[in-house]
Length: 487
Ligand SMILES: NC(=O)c1ccc[n+]([C@@H]2O[C@H](COP(=O)([O-])OP(=O)(O)OC[C@H]3O[C@@H](n4cnc5c(N)ncnc54)[C@H](O)[C@@H]3O)[C@@H](O)[C@H]2O)c1
Ligand SMILES: N/C(=C\C=C\C=O)C(=O)O
Image 1 (cartoon, helix red, strand yellow):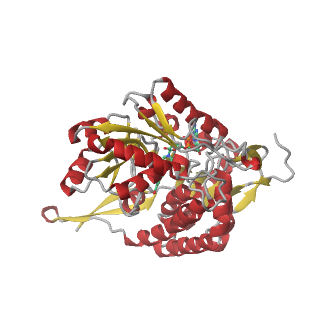
Image 2 (tube, helix red, strand yellow):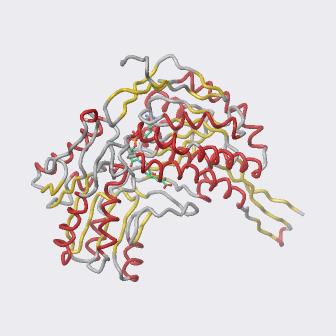
Image 3 (cartoon, helix red, strand yellow):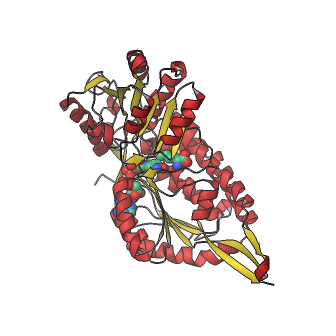
């Protein structure tokens, strides 16, 4: 345990108050490898206190009109926006991403999440049918589920927490959220804004700590009927097991092994920079990142040469460097895991064209122990290799050739995941055809990560269960009831 003197110490946020914890976990600055923060190591007791607070707050919050709740969400969005720079600096320090990315993606999107659900909650309608022969009118009503359990990963901390929190409270639920123990700081900072925004005590409770300890206590609690989880597939399996005896409502947003399919008629001037970005943005630590690039044979050599050149321009730097495209990976353990895949690829006879073990990474002395690595491109690799099958979740991408449409669809679909894909071609008929056949919850053609928050977001196969978005999140965070009136 590091000396605790200068360390930032977080507290749980329960019933509108910050409460200290009996024990703490060290949290590291990924850019230096030094401990800089202490995160509460909460457990069953803290979850019980949060459940009691959320239970007491539910009748009042759920009885408010959608308009009243919407106003609270708008105020919170405004407050987050005012703190954008502080939050961006904190997110970067905690996660390792560049400040530029946190400033332009993570925090603006957190603000947008509150504004978006503040608006969308006002526009839902319910169904009504007539049954004239029986003299009946039927209609549906929706009601909040109760206490929502939200469990989030470390890659886009505030972005993904607010993507769950905003629709949950907009719909009238009260919430217990558990951020990743690796990235808890911006959630804690957000708690400081809740009272000013008008969020009543107990509506939002944030309990920090590890998955096995506090995560499992939340999932197992009988008074939490719903769990919205974003994270890895093995954790989702455990959450599913623990939820089963209680028949909990589950939303699972999991990993991916996302293909990019690049046809010979693709506009390479747009495709190459976008595919470098889709492979390496946020250090490749986005579930939507490309990690298998299939390129049609006739343009394979040209693509590979230009892609490697462009990857070498994707600068790794300290997170505060405005010219850096990529910062540090989340943890030492994760860096080692990502490196181990490159080692395996090499042992299988694949070629590493740039990055890890090929090029030299230059860092200031203070950052030598940080968790940095260069963006790495692998080729001459078989589809059966673990690098082509398993989620690496780091700055590593594989490039392989293909002959024709049918073959590439089959190969793209040959993994257990089905989250996101990109298709590059100037033939509009082809992009529609291929997009329809891909086993993927999201397909971007001639672009990547353009988000329309109204439409369903989520994966198929081992990439998850359920969808998030305006209508989908509303349906998940509410229970529907059919009412029949005989007249
Ligand atoms: N589909 C998406 O929208 C999406 C978005 C971001 C990340 N991800 C996925 O998340 C993974 C990376 O995130 P991670 O390493 O934080 O995932 P993880 O599964 O290790 O952890 C996610 C969260 O679950 C908690 N947790 C761990 N064990 C638990 C348990 N037994 N019970 C309850 N909670 C538990 C963790 O503490 C953390 O808060 C990748 O697989 C990535 O693809 C998916
Ligand atoms: N959920 C979203 C993104 C998930 C990214 C995973 O790392 C979103 O854009 O709504």
